[in-house]
Structures are given as structure tokens and as C-alpha cells.
Length: 78
Image 1: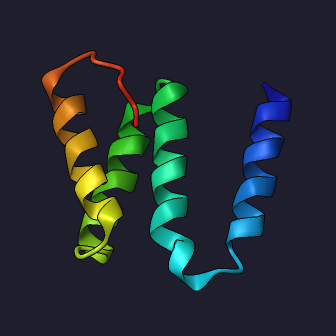
Image 2 (image 1 turned 90 degrees about the vertical axis):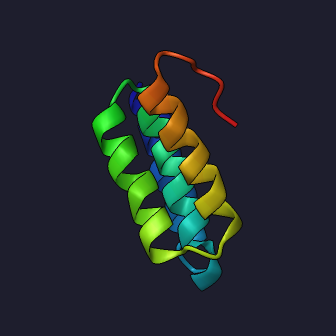
């Protein structure tokens, strides 16, 4: 578990140098939070994507994930 978190932190640190990668970073982090059964934080991150990056491809993906989370236990994370 600690290795997974460390890998995620390193991955996010590498991506932080690219300004256009912020919605991508948020989306990947939200997916990770879902996998860790932290749906509340995942929802917060998806909502942040929708609010701050409405025209991005990640906004649509985030809206889809929010709908699926609200519908129930389906775990098909893309």
C-alpha cells in the first residue's frame, strides 16, 4: 500500500510541471480515490474538474463518473 501511494505521489509530481495536465492529474487522483473506497473525496475532485475545466475532455469523463457513482456500486472506471 505504501509503495502504491509513493508511486502515485511521484507520478503526480512528474505531471505537475505541465500546466495543461491539471485536469488529468485531478481525474487520475479521483479514480485512485474511488479504488481506495474514498468516494467522498473522488466526488469532490470530479466536481472540481467540472467546475474549473468545463471545456476539457476530463470534464465529460468526470460528469460520467459522478453519474455512475450516484447510480450505485458499478465499478467500471475508465
